[in-house]
Image (cartoon, rainbow, N blue to C red):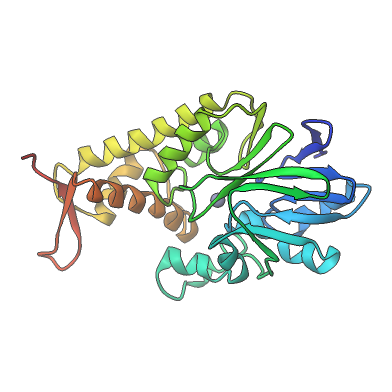
Length: 294
Ligand SMILES: [Zn+2]
């Protein structure tokens, strides 16, 4: 796949995880690095000069798997948001937080655990001047602990704040860490006016509202399905089984299961904190059900 031009100096490399490429007078800036070094290698071969900077939107392994290679080979300066930077530097934390203990070997692969790499600079939302280009760091929390997007030249690399239609059709349930923040980020995006939005999983679009509506409706349908199921008391596993059947999700392994479970847990925590469901421990495990009104 070739580089796709988005503006005079902004490109993206279409991939299962799109990589942003910004041309500057001082070398290239990448936005994320793909799932492993092979993606970064392919991308570098298409360029006339080496990359100089790397901006990470968040720490998920499919976004920072090429960091280590780009750092070793080109000594890129890596920028990442707070907390996400700590996870990029300590990649065992991703399978650990998904599993809750030392993860079984199926979770210790490149899909959930990148090679460790150093982050040079922690970024916070605001404007940065980088190699003659003005780049704005935009807070886009909800999908991960502290995800950000990067805006340049009227183009917002919006990471996993919204997922493209094909990605949603494929996975059925998107990965969400904090549902409330995810919804707030969708509303925030609807109020912005960038010329183009580049989701990491999907194709660039000028109409972000089409994507925010789609993403919101999937999660609202998920909440609705969970509340319907919880009219009868259910353990988390029983609830997941019902939800997966309803969404026609076929779970084939531990990686898929624990990613999906993240979103189910995010919904449980959202509904519990809003007082819509309650938990019972009479069987010594959490059993959830709708909280009676009144
Ligand atoms: Zn992600």
